[in-house]
Every structure is written in structure tokens, then in C-alpha cells.
Length: 110
Image 1 (cartoon, one colour):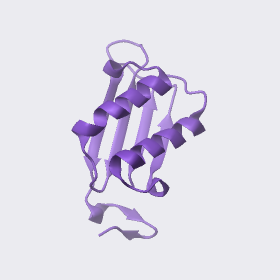
Image 2 (cartoon, one colour):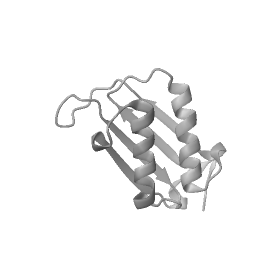
Image 3 (cartoon, helix red, strand yellow):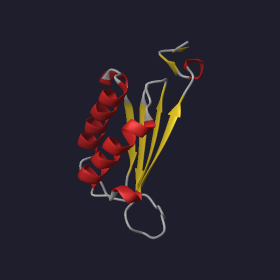
Image 4 (tube, helix red, strand yellow):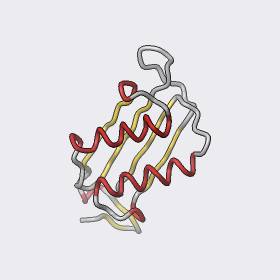
């Protein structure tokens, strides 16, 4: 935790690099160790957002440390710069998950 799930209709050539870089970004924005950030990408997927122009949907979950109003711009800028998707084609969903509902290493965080 935190967890970021990237779904995009764009084709990403270097998924490993993108996952590493977005993990570092999320780590810095949440002030959580990068060793706890999990990232997933589904690229080249079927998406429709008014038309077939490339778009992106990001889901970000964490136990606390989320500040959507401060995080939306740097995340959108990252996606625009690294994936070439205009920021008006990006949706981001933030979810603050209670510690009692998140488990790692066989136990919850509460």
C-alpha cells in the first residue's frame, strides 16, 4: 500500500519503466516507502471516452496519505508527459482504505 492501477487505451512500450517511475511518484506524493507501492498497468485496452482518442483511468488506493486536490495535477502531468495522453482525457479515482480492510504479510494494518 499504496496501490495504483493504470488502465489506458494507449500502447505503452516500456511498461517496466513506467511502473517503476509511477511507483516513485506515488511514493513521493504519499510520503510512503516505495517498497510498499504496488503498481499495475493494463495498456492497449478497449476504452471509450467520448471517442476513441487515447485515454487513461487511474485508481489510487492507500491507507491515509491521500490528498486528491494536491495529487491530481502531478499525476495527470506525469501521464501526459510519459504516455502522451492529454490531461483532459484522464480520470483519477482516489480511495482512502481503512487499515482494517487492507492486509499484507498475512495480517491487516490495524
